[in-house]
Each structure stands twice: as C-alpha cells, then as structure tokens.
Amino acid sequence: MANVRLHAIRKSFGTNTVIDDVSLDIASGEFVSLLGASGCGKTTLLRIVAGLESVNSGSVEIDGRVVTDLPPEQRDIAMMFQSYALLPHLSVAENVRFPLRMRRIGARQEQQDKVKAALDTVQLGHLAERRPEQLSGGQQQRVALARAIVSRPKVLLLDEPLSNLDARLREDMQVELMDIHKRLGLTTIFVTHDQEEALSLSNRIILFNGGRIEQQGTPAEIYAQPGSAFASSFLGAANLIPATIAHAPAAVAVLADGQRLAL
Image (cartoon, rainbow, N blue to C red; front, side):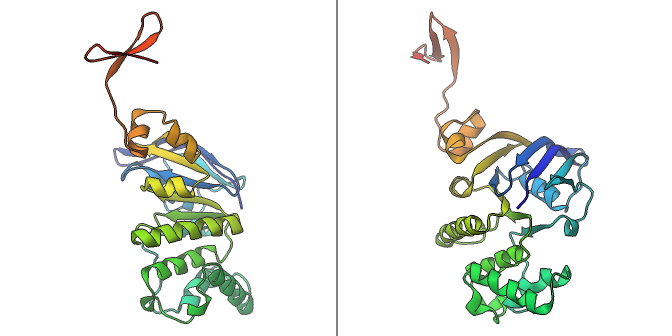
C-alpha cells in the first residue's frame, strides 16, 4: 500500500489541454474512482500515474517518492486495461506469472506460489491450465485482475475494467472487487464513466469535467450535495429551473414566471 500525490498536473496534446492544473492526494489503502464523461481527462490522468503518459508540468509521487520521470516498471504499480490484454498462447497460470517473470521476482517455486494465491483470490485456481479462449468474458476479467495483483503492487490502476461485461456480471464483479480490496488493502485508482460503479465501489469519487476536478467527496457526499449544476445532472436525474436570487427581505428564488420560493 502507498499514498499517491499529484501536484499541479498539466497535460496537452498539441493545442488541446486535457489535464488542467489537477492536484490530488490519495491515501494509502484508499479506493478512489475517477468519474466523468468520455474525453474529460480521467484516463489520461490514470496513464500519467502509470508512467504511460508524460506531463507538461507538475509532479507525481508514490509513497513519498517522486516518480514523474520514471518508466512504469520502476513505479511498483500494476494496471488492468479495459481490453484485459491476455496472451493467447499462454495458460491462465502463465498469464498471471508473466509480470513476475519479466520483473524477475522470486525463484520459480515462489512465483508459482504467488500465482496460486492470486488465482485463489479471484476463485480461478481450478482453471489454471486453460487458455484464455476457453474462458468466459468474466473469467478472462478475473485472470487479468489476478495478473495485476500477483506482485502485490503499491498501487493498483483499473481502466474501466467492467465495461465489457454484461449487467449481471458487472454487478458480480463489483462485489468481488470490493471484497478483494478489503482483503488486500491495495491503494486503488479506478476509472469509470458509470455513476453506479463509482457510487458502489469507492471510498471517494473524483468527478472530472473538461480536464479539471469538478467535485470530490464520499459517494454519499457527492450524490446528496452536488456542488454544481454539472455534478447534479451527471450523478443523477435533476430538474434545473432558471431563477434569480433576491432578498425581500429574506432570501428567495424568483422564477421566470414571478413565483417566489423560500431558500
């Protein structure tokens, strides 16, 4: 487990600014969701934490160490992609073992023990010798998750991992993700555009809009106390009525037809 600190992050692609002065502190063991519509910058920010994108300015710290200019393999993170990226010619066990081999973590027996523990965590130990094409979509998703946690990284990054699953499987995997997070306590950053996922899974939600943080808070806070019209409309159905605030003598909202509502 490790804390993550982002300070004044800016990122542009040409003249298009996708991350605009974002600062964020994530506590050790916290499950944080980056929530927003497509193109709001949430996935770019996740890739910056992973070391897959550079920054124009700002800094990234993991566990108190500045990693802004370090490659992904030196950050002690693991990332699970939306596409799962399983290797079709390897068995389930060898897919999960792959990051241990690449990073030369432990001898072969130690690696096998770690693989078994990871597969048991996602309840797939009985499918260790199968190939990815022999698995269902939900099982493939669990293999990708086992591969991400096998090395017990300091930070786990999840890029819309449930978006390819049907509604029932998504619900099942939400429960499983919460259970795994509770057992392992990994600092987790979860990217999603799905409000229900964010509200169900997170300790804290960071709502993005146009490359900036629109609002952040616990699921209860951000749902019950939206700080802007955008937050209110994005997080749930909302009726927005144009009005003018007046004092006569107490504060009232004056609607377009002249009606007055006490505030």
